[in-house]
Length: 234
Length: 265
Image (tube, rainbow over all chains, first blue to last red; front, side):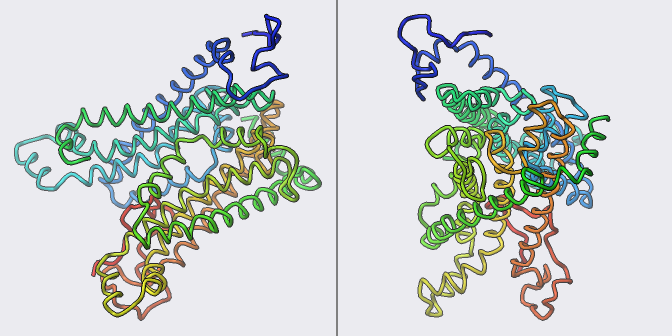
């Protein structure tokens, strides 16, 4: 995308090197394809990572519940992962996944495990024993018990974890810029190298807006999925 | 796995560790940054949070500041600060863009410290607080002799979270030409010297795990319940800590507000 910075008109635009303003409408108009591309990549990486994390977290939580002796190892492993800085974790994955979006997705999915496994486990624990026993008494098979009774009842706690994981994943995706797949982080990285203020501010703001929007979306989803909690929560 | 071989070669070459810009210097720089930022954040955050917790006010802010901190990308804040007014030049032993990095680190260390310290004081059972008042303790005494000791483990858990956060953010600072070990990673990746980048990542990750272990040890020492068996909260005879220590190092609930495993009286 070779858009020259040299102004087409006589007057320098507010994002030219000589003016370099933080807030610049011309930048948003002229460069919006670039911004949209970066946002789409950002969103894609975030969504895939969190979904992958969720798909990993549920079996891990079920394993921890089924075998209590493994619980501390599983929780310890997912917590230890979180202590590794993102800028170090992505390079550590490169020998296995290469310089690809997969590196970022795997890294972020691993990070999301810290919160998701813990919340999934607590969500399953929040299911009252009487409810579980009633279902067994009614002849529910273990699988049907899981999908029809336990999972729906675990949703409030699980969704709380999913919201936290999603919001922090949106923020962490930017660090993927180290392998050139950081969504809006790529714009931040090139912005800081070129001292391009309009681009830096725009990418930062979109990133925060993205996190807030996804959080609101998940909250709405949770309300729709768990109509029985609506009367209780404020 | 040629990449891992390159990383190993970089790590075992002593020349990469010594001298100016060597990994030892960068390591010291980053540790110095981390410790300073954590100390500043504690000096700012702890008094406010503990005081708010003692008064029972400002809970909405104290709890939501962590959620806000999560939504804001550290990378973006580092970039904004370094391109902004505080980003130019060096700051003594903290190296290039040191001031911008230091401010960003303090900002990101504050949320876990504030949230945990506030929740820690609020979670002191009201019966205990009332009993202390009933014994004639004043507000300050209740805080010093009852609330603070009981709140300590959760406060330390917050410091531990903050430490992890600060070390990670200090690493990311290298993406905006900041100081510290992250530069080995960014240099390696930006110049297609992936072995070097990987070597830097290995050192950063190892130090992170060591810091986490140290923090976990500190947390264990800070727990007044550590010597007390899970069943009998009154038996304080054995304080060597060997008997029935409830929380293990890593699986401990570090999330603010999570119920801690204390003895059921």
